[in-house]
Image 1 (cartoon, rainbow, N blue to C red):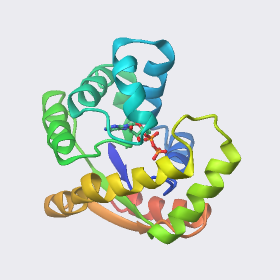
Image 2 (cartoon, protein in one colour):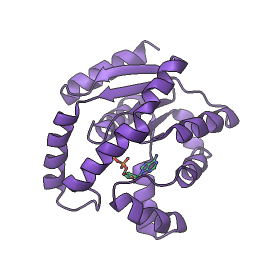
Image 3 (tube, rainbow, N blue to C red):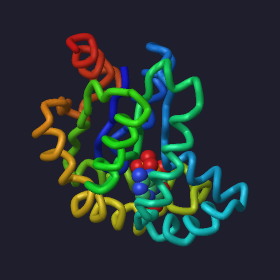
Image 4 (cartoon, rainbow, N blue to C red):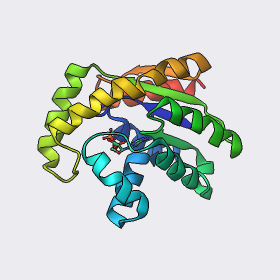
Length: 190
Ligand code: ADP
């Protein structure tokens, strides 16, 4: 199965994706991880993405879609993909529809992890303190920007996927175990 984990920064998408990789043998496709790897490698994509990412803004749809398209050509994606951090704009969602059609893949579900901003701001501050600069974009100020970007550019995807009938919403404010259990219920019911 191929699914999207949708939710604001700090919602726990990466944590739940890792559990789905371990539990269901799916492949995690995190555009954040892929872009950080490009920055570390100093590739052309990395050079273009670096400053944008540090400011908490979005890398261009064209660059991100190109990176995802290449990744989808690797054979391991046949095990099933968890899209984590992609799509993040309506243009990316439309591009993903085209890519999946081209590659003969289908989207089984979009799992929205819903968490209130007030809770996220607390989590964000804890994470910024804990990681202490291991990620250039992990400071409270940038993370607040990213939350604003989420509401403006990514939250419209909730209506988009609501319209296609693929959207499933879980309460992301519960414990990691509880959220995993809710996601498992959703996926088992597909
Ligand atoms: P999170 O901490 O929420 O998991 P990510 O690691 O997914 O964040 O993303 C980190 C940064 O990488 C974003 O703030 C953005 O600059 C860039 N990025 C990741 N995915 C995308 C995308 N799909 N479109 C545009 N920019 C992206």
